Image (cartoon, rainbow, N blue to C red; front, side):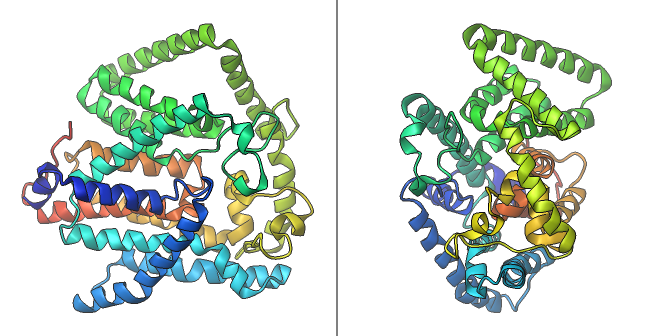
Length: 427
């Protein structure tokens, strides 16, 4: 009953703290905070040293037993930076070293390999992983809410804080919400299993910490679709119908209350959705500057994709002759335009390489018995579905999604070793 023990065993606070720090670094949660970039640069060096020296020693002791996922993670670390650097040199003349350094964040994938080894050895327990993730979900939600209430984003608008505050007429903090999304799915999907209204309330409460960022149209739809996907799979027709009616009434009541408290916020969000539809389906500019700003970036990226569809154009360093902004002669951030930006950087070959991680996730889920469920397992599946639907997180922050793929595979492997074949519901 190895898996059962891993989920129910006591939590060691020291290991949870260890995981909290590790996940903050691996997910690059605080990268754009003032003064934090230097810490992450050190983190990348540590990851590289682990992969170059410690990891080979550990594998040598295990007689070089690596599974397909480990080989895949190593291939990502080796192939993506070199492919991007070579393409950037060919297209723009950027030196190879600059090209390699633009992809240094991918060394965080080495931390995923570290987590695999530590979980297999029992250094971390699944209960501790769950605790660390939920601490980070609530911690970031509370901190982000406090920042939006107590701090003025306009005071941080300067070149030194690029990425910390969004550009525009009304600056807002550009805060990472990966842990919050995981937590929202944790409670929402647990609510489907337990039928407890408290879980849905906790999900909504947690979501308030991400309201400014998750208010992105694609993100909201991806979160809703992810939840409904599991609702349609798990619930019988009668219960599903009742749940959808309650959900519609709840959303209507929430929107109504929000309109009474902050009418400008509600009308603004509705206008944003309308603007997004106009831009997507007509290609015409709308009244939303955020949606309009993506049109010229897509137009800039299209010729590069057409000329180099297989391997893309690579990534340019801001430290080399002004970077991509100078090369394009205009504002251009590939990450802002989703898959189109990824195709511009890495081409169809690179995009396929990044997408392959979901194949490992699907295989892991298929290895699980149909009866198996836990809130941690459900939330991991929900988070990966969310990233596949609504973001390029699996490309530009690949260590984040790979961590949850690794978690699914670990749980599936423990199931194979567990004669009971069942996971308890995590309350």
